Length: 392
Image (tube, rainbow, N blue to C red; front, top):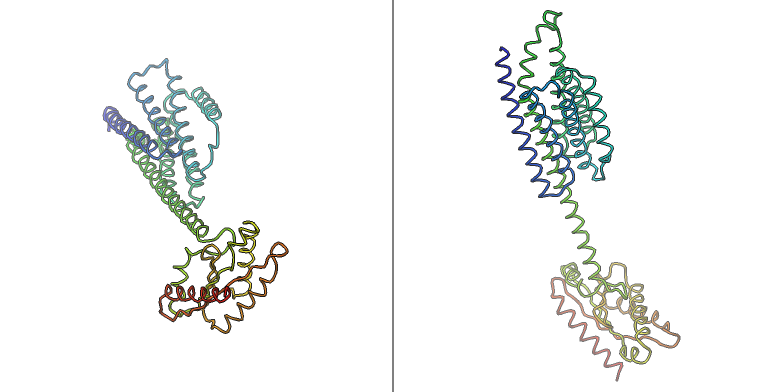
């Protein structure tokens, strides 16, 4: 392949890469606008810097102003350095979800120093190519290895894309080194022409590797977003469960309220249970004569007496107001009466020094497979019957 064909191949490859970089920049811009993720903004800027570097190179090849070579060198090296820095920043933000690892002033200072020193040391395009592709290759390969070894989920494709792009840059650096070999000088002389052909088409290879990086970025962000959504959904479900528990629990007595009855009834219905319906006697009078504070103290004392007198597996519910319900499985009426007597003994303790809280209770059996509402109504009726006997 002669020089004219190599130049044509280079122009075609460069046009392809310029178009590709413009598409990648636009893609990340749209994606960053849609999701507002910080790593997407970093990657959008990174691909724009990469586009700018190739645009500077293309402009130099078209215009070839020898007296502006130092300026073009500084712009090219700076744009490539910004590309690498922003690419790594995006990966860092995605993996760690923390702030940037360097400030804009720091990155600008480092990039400017690198670009100025590099341009001062390099006198031609070959030396620029050797420097830039060596730095780019070593940095990307090292960062790809570090990303892979982080063992974070969803970054394997991204690390692979970065690694491939780094290896390709090292290959391009070696090709530029071969370009500096004098004709007929040693065994490497035979590789000069293939190296030139490789460099002419290198933009096409760069395009493929960069799209592999872009694919890795998209897959990594998608996987991270999916897991963040799962975590958020789990947290939401946990919060809903906490709210449900709060809604099902009476804040004064710390007992569950009647909202929990459907779940309790479903649990005890297959094997049956004994229901005990309690109601405090004269509770309204307590509130009227002694105040609501005394009434609240009476309710808390009664709830504590129920919890302490019945078994840990028995369900103690504040049904409403001064009404309480106990649902006990495997407990017969004689044993239940003994526990009710224990409640009465505990309630002999006074509230406020003189006040004694009394209660009435009714019992009903829920047969296995029976209707809990029917048993509940029967226990309620027995309670009112007992209360009328007390009044009489």
